[in-house]
Length: 123
Image (cartoon, rainbow, N blue to C red; front, side, top):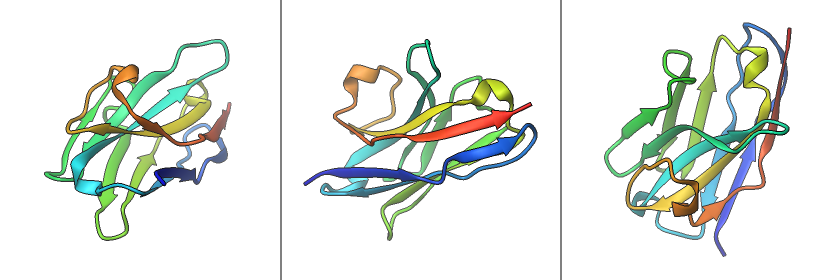
């Protein structure tokens, strides 16, 4: 059974940090790219960052560049999203998702999704 389980969201003040993680099981970790997406109330789900555990290649959207860092622990099959200098506009439910082969931003291309973890940034 494929599972992606996010933990590590929470409530933080603006300027603070959080590091949610995504524990993956049920498929070969190196065969998939793992992306982080987020969805704020009333808004569409959007990409944040993505990593290919096979080669360590990472990519970020403009909203994450310079503040967020994605990493993976291939032995534990866990992907982390270190989020620094958080802003109120980062408030959203954060999801991790798995895509066969490579990072991409098309949400429909991701086969497996976690249940999400809430991140709330207060001003």
